[in-house]
Amino acid sequence: MELCNEALVKIQEILPSGSTILELGSGHGTKKLLDMGYKVISIEQDPNWQFKYHDNYICCPLKQYGKKPWSEEQYGNEWWYDDDVLSSLPEFKDKYDFILIDGPTGPNDGAYNYCRMGFVEHQYLFNMGVPILVDDTNRKYEKELAQALCVDRKFEDYERFYIIY
Image (tube, rainbow, N blue to C red; front, side, top):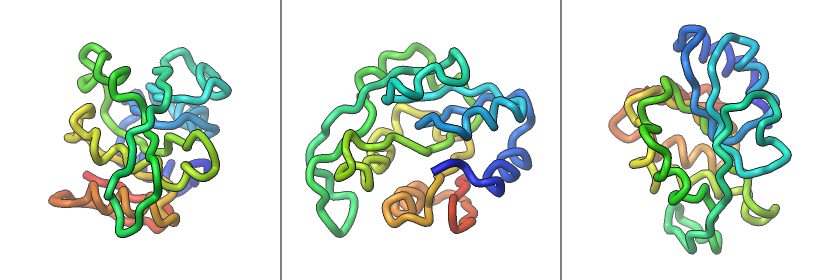
């Protein structure tokens, strides 16, 4: 789903124009962020979206990590961005002011629902001292992701997205 207008307004309230957003999952919202004056670094696994709106994409395939007990239910094999690719990026953590989680999408329809939860296990790859927007929290699994990231942090729940400070 595309970033809703309310999320874009909240980003503008938090982040000055010209700041850099690290976006997990590129889409039509990427163009809107660029048009708003933000620099965007996009982590994207889908070649159809890579380099669509700018030249600062991190092309990162998905990797199968196996079963993860992140929820009360078990969802089979879980997919997330390849941590070997992300950990090989020099000084990656110092290059952004905000994280937007709107990906990845799974490698097939059955894996889509739960694939973003990989962020929880891979927080060490990111600068967790910046604000984070988790999109699509009107869906069960994205809400679980946002709630997992809210532990010991201030947050705002806007129904369709969370902002975590």
